[in-house]
Amino acid sequence: MDLLIIGTGYVGLVSGTCLAEMGHNVTCLDINKSKIDSLSSGKIPIYEPGLEEMVARNTKAQRLHFTTDYSTVKDCQVCFIAVDTPVSSDGHANMTAVRAATQSIAQHMDSYTIIVNKSTVPVGTTELVRQMISTELESLNKNIPFDVVSNPEFLKEGNAVNDFMKPDRVIIGTNSVEAAATMKQIYEPFMLSHDRMIVMDPCSAEMTKYAANAMLATRISFMNELSGLCELTGADINKVRKGIGSDKRIGYNFLYPGPGFGGSCLPKDIRALCAHGKSLGYDMPLIHAVETVNKRQKEVVGNKIIDYFMERGGLEGKTIAILGLAFKPDTDDMRESSSLTLIPQLLSHKANVRLFDPAAMDNAKKLLPDSPAITWCKNEADATHGVDAIALITEWKQFRLLDFQKILPKMKGRAFFDARNQYHAEDMFKKGIDYISIGVVPALSEVHQRVTR
Image (tube, rainbow, N blue to C red; front, side, top):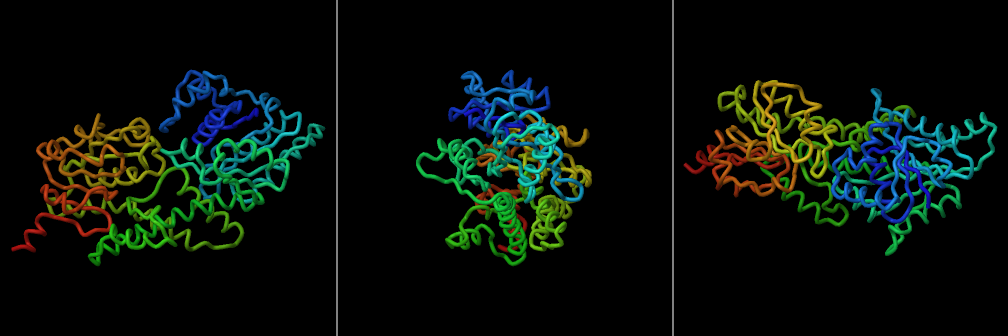
């Protein structure tokens, strides 16, 4: 099938490439000429495992094409809108790119076309797009049949290719039997073993996307809030997680405490959901609380570091290694990353930081200030050389088994702040490390000495 993907950001590029991998003839369109030129020459603008090889393979096979020309709408049966919808200052999703793409589609279509919205958009956008296309066609004196479908994406950065190729579910929002049949034909190769397509009305499909992200964000903030209480009571959040996760009604997913969630989806989607509710006169205190807890959690690691050094002469002049800058592993995405809260916190207390991330260094340099207090490092060994403490912020696999035999002799101090609870307190204590994690009473050498005297 001939498909057009409008927008070559994270969702558009991954979706278009995976659809081409399954044999569809896919054209990816973007109004950013430099981005299209880069993609045409094989340069991928995002870090996503497996994507670069798949783009190269399908480009070579001439199943995947890149263009800035909207006239390609005429050649495609289905047009996917996968443009960015950033949050405006008032919390609402910015629909500028969606509106522009919709208008351009209407101006160039000349036969029955299915317009599919994959962007994360407010409930009611499918009807908005339908009205816009109808208005534009009327102004052009064109009588062309079309359908508009909601098809929200559920891609996790760092695992997006696998998520698309082996989806948990495919949500299709449409009242058109013909459009639903076409969408099933598109996705059928991804569901040969089991049909995971769920067809519903467009409004419900649009709400499903926001509801899923709001639920995930709620679970994360719940565990982060509980972790603070665990530290005060002597409970261990890691054990609590196992205890409640064993309940089949709850499960283990998204119950890991950490430094707060970030990225391109959860933060903006809960704000947009709250803003949409407010516009309808409907308050959403639970979702507001999720964001409040998350903002507080992003300061937790920095506060732990500040408190630790307050009893040791203060943080001024101390050097902290930050391992991991991206909001999660296997991506270079810095959007709303906890490191962007932590680093300014430390700098405001006149500390020095040594930074390393396997993929996000270039993006981090664009967002952090030029400062003599910041040193950009080539690997974890370089980052931890001569530091007073280490803060593990992003759980990259290569940080799971750090070689402390080599690292510790080159450190000034012995503090390790584990924002992802990757290590075990008792093991770290035996190595002579002051270990401070999330939701667990710190394992400090001087505390142990006082207790055992």
